[in-house]
Length: 111
Image (cartoon, rainbow, N blue to C red):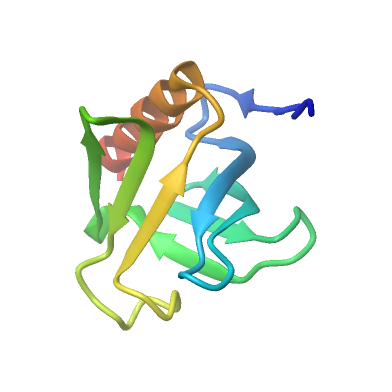
């Protein structure tokens, strides 16, 4: 099985591509399309559908040494149109995770 991952990065605080989102014990990990636009992390099942938005200004972005492809986005509040306080994400490679982490942190600094 081959997975093609497309990541688009530019210098304007934007990035987009597919990551895996933890959906719970029934659905488990699902492929979701994420994009950074200005101070928002926007996500949905595909580029045309938006299921949630996270304001990066008020989030905590966490990585764990023992989980090399995982990212945790903690919004700290349940009010931000995500329906959850924490998003558990997995990249398809360590390199991809590092790119997302750096772009998310850089975007936080710009806001």
